[in-house]
Length: 209
Image (cartoon, rainbow, N blue to C red):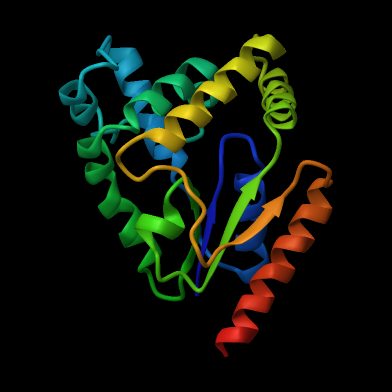
C-alpha cells in the first residue's frame, strides 16, 4: 500500500504522514528533507542557489545527517524552495523517491508532488492544507522549539513566497491531484487531523477493495 501526502509548507502533512506510517506500520519518507539536504550542501559549500548546475552538484548528500536541526532552519528552507524549481534537481532526486515507494509492502511519502508525479498510482492520496497565517504560526512555534531565532512576520512572508514558487514553478508544481482527498487542518488539533486522515485513507481502501 502506498499513501501519498501532499501540501504546502507547514500544513501538517509531515505530522500526518508520520502518524499514518505508524498506524499502518509502513516506512515513511519526508521528501522535503531531500531538497533541504541539497540546500544545506549549497549553503555549506557557498554554492549559488541561482545556479541549476551548482544545485545539481549538491544532490550528492552522502555526508548529510538527516537529524541535523539545521535542515529545519528558515535559511535552508528558503533555498530548498528556490532550488526545487530546477527540473534537473528534481530529476536527480526522483529515483530515490520512487525506489522508496516501490519497496515491499509499500510506504508513506509526503511532499509537494507525490500524488501527481512521484507515485500517481498511490492507493490513497491526501492534500493537506491550512491558511498561510495558521501555517506561519506552526512553523514559528516549531523554530522556537528548535531554538532557532525567527520572527512571525518573516516566517509568514517566507510561507507566502514558498507557496507562490511551489504553485507556479514549471517543474512538478504544487497542485492537488484530481483523485486526492482534501484535508484542511486550519481549525483542527493534531489528533483530530490524524483521525480524519486515517478515515479518508480507510474510505479509499474500501473503495478499491
